Image (cartoon, rainbow, N blue to C red):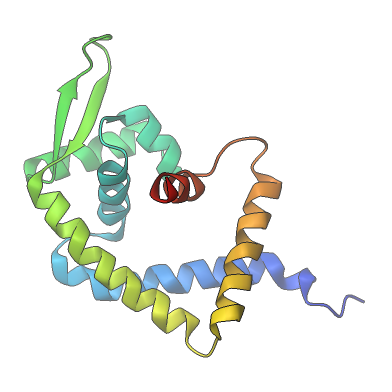
Length: 157
């Protein structure tokens, strides 16, 4: 019998992520985008010029789903597709001014959700939680640098 709680780790991480997404959707819906569109928008703003194929990998969805999502977002003026100068088959995705402004607004919503999620934890407990999750991701990444850590390294530089 395991008394340290690690037998529930996967369920706890899954439930925490699901509940945060649900809260984010409730707060973020006032901006007129679905959670899938928000996730894509964040990736595009943080990685301007990303390919559709890479977006599919990052979002863990099928390329055809990303293509349809991009079609709707392009029609709404959220993203712009550009031809890759080195490979005509590749389309690069760029944010528009509209999506950059929305991204700034959504950072506030994300902060609100994070604060709700972390209520009751001291600063030290929050730091320990983040370090622990980063270690967990490092341990399971098989040499792939996770997107969140790439963003953190860019922000620190």
